[in-house]
Length: 200
Figure (cartoon, rainbow, N blue to C red):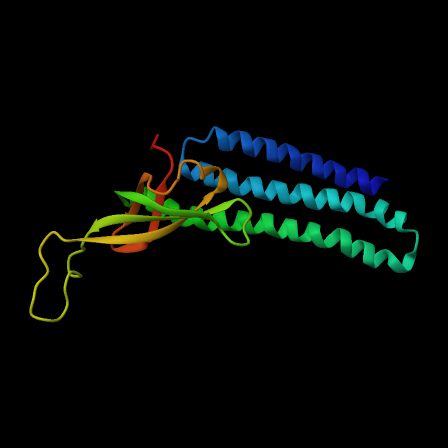
């Protein structure tokens, strides 16, 4: 009884965390805060699933009635919960990693127009999107033409295709063909960020 009450209390705190994170996501006014709260949301969901599973485990084991089947029952209960918790933590880790990359680009990158090419849910990541977009950049000095006897025309451009990771609630606003903005470092195009919010 104490065990169930303890973990039910932890689950209750997790639910409060979920509600607060959702509220702050909806009120977010910056890209960084939006990704931070989205990551926290997945951590809170993982805490709720883990705590509720632990709270119910003793009661479900007692219902089995046979000591030799307890490990089988525990496996049936624990496996789906473990998969759900790991999926939530994977989502949180993905968004945290993306947030670090985006933070630099949003602070220091130049802004360019881009076009969404395609969008899809990332494999093995619940409600996380992979948004592919193309941006046209001026050719960087010193990289225009190497070898041969012809020189590339001055003022050339290059088309860059990148994939951004976004929470699933961006699905509606990132349809293929949509014009978007991206901030990136032309000298290091691995540092980029799809702009989702106007700067405050």
